[in-house]
Amino acid sequence: MKIAVIGIVGVPASYGGFETLVENLIEDDKRSYTVYCSSSHYPEKIVSYKNARLIYLPFRANGLQSIVYDVFSIFHALWSGHRDFLILGTSGACILPFVRLFFPNIKIVINIDGLEWQRQKWSSLTRRFLRISERLAVRFSSIVVADNQAIARYVEVTYKRCCETIAYGGDHAVIDAMIVPGTRSATDGDPYAFALCRIEPENNPHMILEAFATGKLNLIFVGNWQASDYGRDLLRRYSNVPGIEMIKPIYDLHTLACYRRNCEIYVHGHSAGGTNPSLVEMMHFDKPIVAFDCVYNRATLEGIGHYFSSASTLSHIVEDGFFYNDGVKFGDIARRRYTWRIVRKQYRELFYSDEECIDI
Image (cartoon, rainbow, N blue to C red; front, side, top):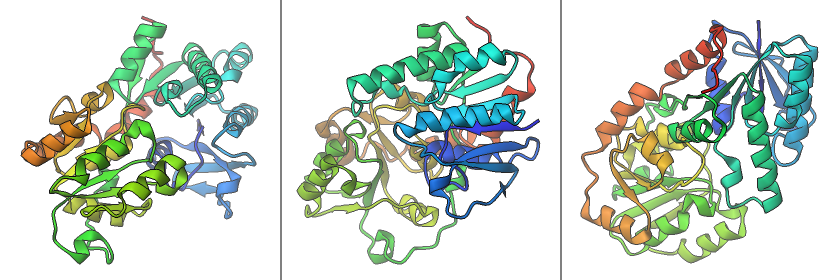
C-alpha cells in the first residue's frame, strides 16, 4: 500500500528541510509513495521519481494557500484509496476532525515541525491559527512525530500524547568536493568561520555579525540578505566590514561542501524550530560548532561544545579558541543519529508496526 506524502513543495527537492526529508525517504525500496507537489514549482511535470508517484495540484505550498493545498491533497489521496498518510506540517490540520469522522481507521502520521506559532515573524492572529492547527494535528493523528527531543517533551507535557522523535539525516551533504572556482578556499587561505541561515531575527544573524565585526577570525555568512528590510539593513551595515563576507543563498551541495570542509568553525544562530537540517549536515564534517544557547540546539548536539547567548559571549569563545577539540565529537554524534539510513528505518517502522503510539 502506498503512503501519501502531503505538505511539501514537491520532489525533486531544491531546498527545504521537509523536501530533503522526502527526497531521501522515497529512496526506500521497501515502500512506495505518492507525493503531492505544487504545480507552480515544476514546469516539467514528471509522473514518477525514485519510488514515488507524483501528483500535482494548482496551489502554492507556502503562505495562506498552503492550507488549501494540504486540504485538497488529503481529499485527493482519500479519493484515490490511500489509507496511510505522512503529513508534514500542520497547515491542513483543520480538516482532520472530518477525516477522522468518515475514515476512522486510516493511519495518519504527522510531523508537527518546529512549533511555528512561537516564531516572532507571525502576527498574533496567525500565531493563534497555528496553535489551533497544532492542537488538531496532535489530537487527530495516529502518531505524532517531532524532529527534536525538546519538542517531543513539549507535546507530551502539553497534550498528554506520546510523541516519536525522528530528526533529519545530514550525510547527503558530505561530498568529495574539489575546490569550486570562486569560493573562498579557491582564492586565498585565510582561516574563516562559516554561518548559514535564513536571515530572520530569531536566527540571530545580527548577533553573529556583531561578534565578528571586531574579531580576528574572518566570517563567511550565507543567507537571503535581500529578502527583507531586516536583511538589507544588515547587508548595508556589515558588507564593507573587513573580514566579513556576506554571500547570497547557495543551493549547490558541492559549493556548500567546499565552504564547510575548509572552515575553522561553524556558527549556528538558530533559536527556534527544533532540529535544524543545516546543523546536522554540518556535524558530518567533523568541524567545531558554536551554537546559540537554546534547548533545541543542546538536544541536537547532546550538550557538547560551546554555546553563546550574546555577541560578547560568541566573541569571547571565538577569540579564546575553546572549541578546537569538539569537531570529531560532533561527527561521531552525526554518524550515530543523523543519517538517512537511520531516518528511513524509523519512518518505515511507524507504518509497518500495527501498534499505535498510545496516550500517556
